[in-house]
Image 1: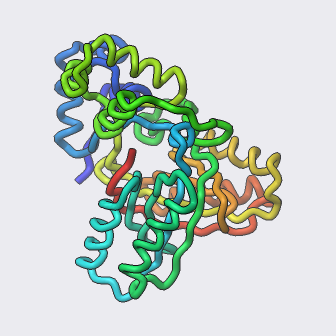
Image 2: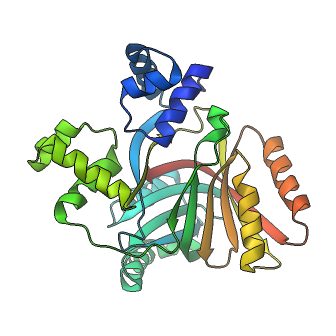
Length: 317
């Protein structure tokens, strides 16, 4: 079931996308509604399932983690076994994202590893338990991930992006800041008073620490997780294979992809894929129209592409 959004809903979603820690009063002033109406509309969007949760987007590289992706192709898999594998992987340490796929891969997960040994331990853990079902697999380390606003839903032309990785070097934070991040990555709209009680600090102290974590780049944004199916969209992950992988050419393609409102992520990674992006579309026709336009606008760059459907994401933070 999809939910119909009016202009006010879209404006509220936009405000929650760029900063979910805004109060209802702050959002109300920006969208031209009363505080109570904003509260009601947000509650309706949550109850409908369109807003699944709220999370802090953390710059994991600054926190000292590599963003490692595992992709698997299965064979002889039942629905029950697929659920078993997903449940098992989600319980492993530092799994920050996991999803089923349809197409080239059947399952993927992101491990936040401090080093290659940690990555290998988790990787071998999965292989030792489920290798009989795995017919293909790949490990890839993301260098940069560009996150974009959900422009495809709000119809607001905003190319704001947040980049994980790149030239950010790891820095140390104390135990209290770590606990604050744990709370915010699970629900970034958690009230200051509640966090303060949990950590035996004052709300003022918590507010100061959160602002400092944002200012120093540990927290990139406060966002909501969208249920794209309820919004009426299909999610595709596209793998681009390039003829010329020079930095100049790759940057040109990245800058072009940034202008497309259906693009939600762009990933630069070490692996067999030269560039990746995620796209939300309302139909197969829209998907192919966008891909054809990209191919025709960059004929001397794009050698080939592959794509797969991302029906559901189990975890994101």
